[in-house]
Length: 338
Ligand code: NAI
Image (cartoon, rainbow, N blue to C red):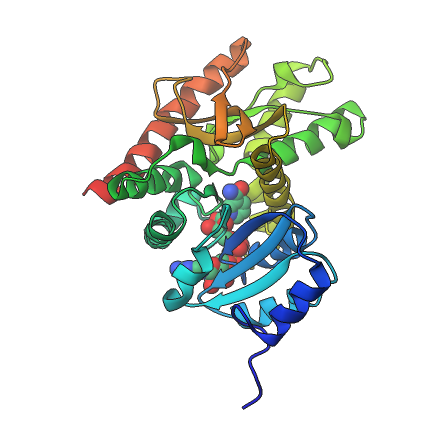
């Protein structure tokens, strides 16, 4: 048999990678679900991130192929592949950041909650591995329904005695990315100049863009507000329908995931003033989890910001968001406590 070039510490490929890299300092990042629709472009973009020194790619299928492919990129990070449950612990040991896009995506006609039965179990298993092998890692949870999987992860970590609310972040960055894009379109601006806070959660009406707090300051007619809010809330469904059974957003999600992971890594490095929206443990409302702007630092989400002033439209939206969120959070907690 030919030597296994792709996999594992000490492989020929990795030795070559290490030599090429020259030992530059950086962070160790694992992607769980790395062979999937999100996982593959996410792995590609993480391999290009100069803050990443080691990139672990874990999946239950196709991890060796994706690893071999990504490892040929002439960028700094050393890439190692891990296939299947027996290799989960090796994939996680020593990681600073774990990004989780593992699980099934939506098909037309499905809500994110329809994914609960499959993805809840996957997230539970992966988080048990994190609690055991890298309890201090920052976790970026992408698997849907995020409104329930984050509470599931929190319960798993509590059970294991490793829970630190600052280090568990549900990724809602795609809602922000979409909001910036759609708002920029309406305003006739470059999306890179636009910043829209999106709070609440990551499903339907729980996605609450705060159009009254857009930067640069601007105002919208009630028709524009209605159009933008609905389009941001239904952005995922727009992609699911266009893909017509082939899955949900993967490329824009990988972009958003890397944008968020990069912010977490810059926070870990100690950069000042890094703020992004994320779904985290929160005291901003009466709910135990809520997405708002957070300040990212060495400890993770070091500060959770208040909502700021809302207009009447947003106050009504907030009430609907909280109602649905409360049920989704409870569903996640019950899954572990049952
Ligand atoms: P996909 O089906 O293309 O890929 C999922 C990958 O997870 C597959 O490679 C699969 O083998 C792997 N996987 C399944 N069970 C696993 C396990 N136990 N351990 C490790 N890996 C496992 O799905 P896609 O499109 O990449 O979506 C992944 C998840 O991300 C879905 O739950 C989707 O709903 C969610 N998502 C979240 C978004 C967000 O904004 N937070 C946006 C878009 C999708």
